[in-house]
Length: 150
Image (tube, rainbow, N blue to C red; front, top):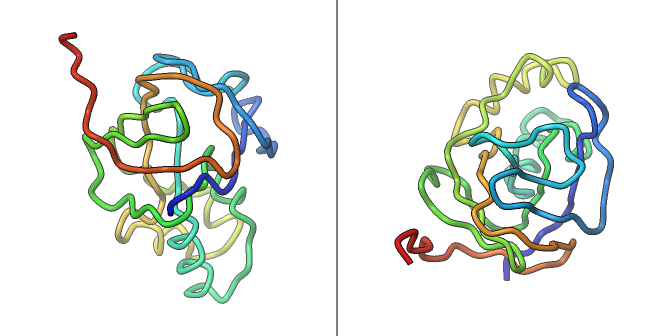
């Protein structure tokens, strides 16, 4: 079973990532208390297994907050997930695309930015289409898209 492994909230642009056991996802906005609100990039996600592959490749052991993604999920491959809907607990997220790694990745580990460019290694970004309270350990799964006409 795929689960939500970690939650990270960025309270200021370029600020540190604070761990959380719970968070509130707000439809059309993002994570309550997070610096990034609105638009199509409301929440960023990375798969824990993919992160560990990158760490093995770089002979490193960095914590997932080095990636600066909001949600770390276990056992959900994000590769080519654009347009898919992901359920985390009661919330639903519409994946809009790949999170491209920036130069900050090389600040934490030289060569990481380039390594992350393969197979959506930087994870994905999403819009919250159905909000709710999420918590570490919540089940994560791909679901059929909500019908916006109803």
